[in-house]
Amino acid sequence: MKVLLAGLLILPCLSGAFAADPPPAGSAADHLAGLQRWLDERPHLHASFRQSLVSGALGTGLVESGELWLRRPGQMRWEYRDPEYKLALVVDRRTWLYLQEDQQLILGLLDDEASLLPRLLASETRLQSLFVATPMDLLEGDDGLGILLLPSGVDEAFEEVRLVLDPRTFAVREARITDSGGNRMLYTFEGWEPDPGSSDPQFRFEPPAGTEVVGSHEP
Image (spheres, rainbow, N blue to C red):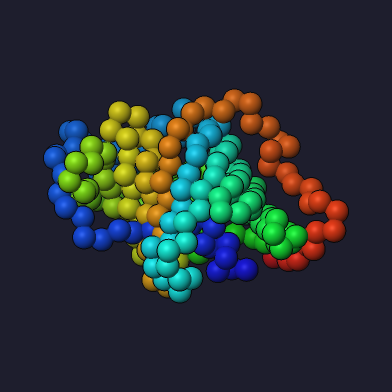
């Protein structure tokens, strides 16, 4: 379960990038602060996403897509639509993973390996306290802002996070992570928009009759 949930809720790194034109003026720390402002001003967000497994123990070549609802602090709803329906909910540290094909609901608690995206996008903790930001070159022709994030602590479960931000809004276009096990995953986001209509029922889930429920929200 831990590996599967980590695969659903974490991100990757992409190597071999070519330098692009210089980004708009500002340091990597400024760009991270811009991302923090973007999040602070939009506590409820919606976007479409595409998740790609680049490499690692989980295999290669898996691509999934769907929609994300974000309600800060601490709530995320991932609806996977393609190639099969899955639902992943995060409310604070509690998680629900519904696998429609398997008719199974997995309950759990976030651990360090699976908590990166919730911490990056939904945490109350300031990003500047979680990460040290340095500049990152992008592929030629990419007009985004690239920043490499390294964990500020010494016991983190991931090695690095690479973000591509929109140069006008600081919204996250891509998030890529390499975890401590060598797994590399890529999330791309499109169509970020405020979602003031998000409500508590979106972040609760009652499984259909006959669903097998495994796991627990107990430590």
